[in-house]
Length: 403
Image (cartoon, rainbow, N blue to C red; front, top):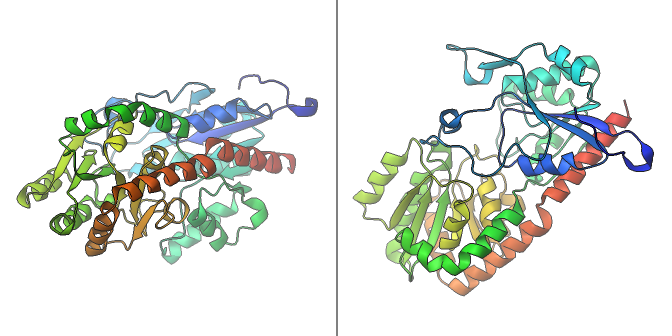
């Protein structure tokens, strides 16, 4: 791990090993912010660095992120063993000799970004055996009910961790539901690179008319944007069904801009064509392009089920000054959506209720713009890399200094 400036009062910086399944565009600003903290000496360990084809799994198109995801912090690849079929995806990779890896890196604390792949669980077990404290930043929340055996596994897993970084209210409730004490919880609000999205949106605003024309959005329409994979958990077909109800009843013209690809693309396109819905399918847009889609639209819609443990596209759209409509199963709903102020929440699966929400949001464009401005202010003030980084540093210092 690389050397760092001296910590405050001459104390040696704490060596922090962060472990992630793969480079994620949302993690990069956090890692860069942690890397410049004098209290820490950070190294990030990746279990996988996917190529363009692997990165595109689920998106329906091969791609690499067009924003830097590996710059500004020290990182290395984990030594892994690959397993083919019939191993499930969770077990497809295994870290070779995790205990030896920890002896080599000698971290004072390990930061895990979840437990969704086996290498993360391996590092949790290895750190526990080595007496190295673990800080957990997972995405699980308390919105769904788990079977007894899953709760038992969670109870064991959480019992191995010294501290936790809840990303929002439902995340905190998840940990509290397993008896985690407040003293071990360090609130680290989930965020995107607000400055990037707000800045890109500001640059795109003068070209809003051209952007709408690019995606065949009528100039007089109130446009809602769906951004994400076209996969079952995100419920694109619910949204199309709601648009079928809403379009004929809305006093203002409606349009839907669908950004993304995936397994339900053909079905969604067929439904839209069958019912002659006002929809544009824009396909996949990379990180540098997506702010333009938010600017072309007037609000974001995310009708997902419990599988949407947070929904960072909501942060993105809000940072771009757009109000949001989300289902009550979306993890960020309680944090980001202030009903009537930054957006609205509808009951999951209630397509008639979603249709009413679309019509209501579209009635007054001036009110919708004001909601978007309040949405931007909300995330810029409360859901920031600075707040999350500070919480991370506090958690690491507490667990490392108490061992």
